[in-house]
Length: 196
Image 1: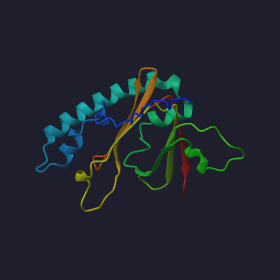
Image 2: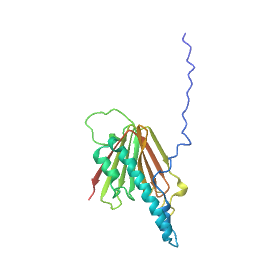
Image 3: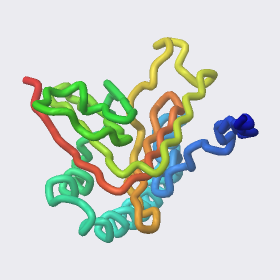
Image 4: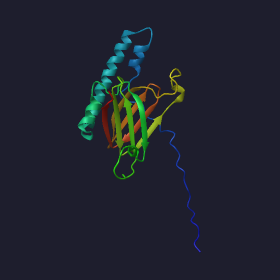
């Protein structure tokens, strides 16, 4: 008679340290200097000079990533008009096949993927970012920092940055509510669609 196996089940627990790291090229001092009363012109000039330095360093980082991106996706990430400026996060979905929501003619192989859709500040465009080859997803939604006036909202995008993570890339987002997202991945595609 065969003896029952003595296998044990180890339940994997979430990593408590998996909070997205702060953005490398964003300094809140510029916004603070603009919104603090009384207005301090010297403080604002210092903050603006630092923001310009950080932006120049970020453009260098982006240029190094250009060979890993399609020309269209690179042009959107490097556009000085910042297409995601103050954008609202309409949808953030992840799973083994978010593309199943789209029309398909045959069954596709299941693979972990992420999709984020933003509405532009002017309300004219939708921006959809699709990520493949996912190696990590970190999310922090600190409810205690949400705006009481507006209720529970992720709110508008303060800043985002695409950076190198060795052989991978990392896209990090910081929202006005204090919420943060960080995705580590191999490939990203950025599509835009006019809604007017």
